[in-house]
Length: 93
Image 1 (cartoon, rainbow, N blue to C red):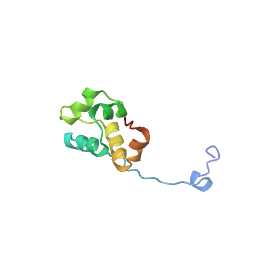
Image 2 (tube, helix red, strand yellow; image 1 turned 90 degrees about the vertical axis):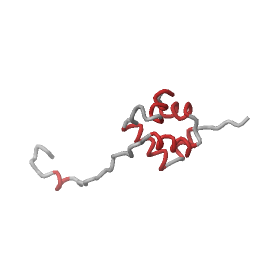
Image 3 (cartoon, rainbow, N blue to C red; image 1 turned 30 degrees about the horizontal axis):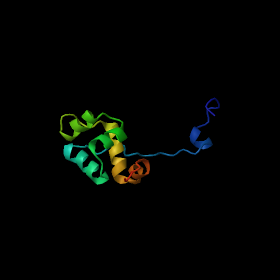
Image 4 (spheres, rainbow, N blue to C red; image 1 turned 135 degrees about the vertical axis):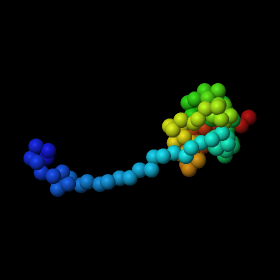
């Protein structure tokens, strides 16, 4: 198609997709709020997100900003809490 010089729009279906990929900016209270909504301890949420406990604590204390990738995941956890509940198995003794 490229070698023939034919416009791609004539040969293929072309679509334009718009994405809103800007995550919420999470402050200390926002991170604590997500954790409370999920009923998670700091160690459990840190492990779930793949960060150290110290990193999560630094977010909650406002010492370090929440990185964009983590903010996107926190957005997903808030919008789709079943992501959390499907992956966490609560063992009651």
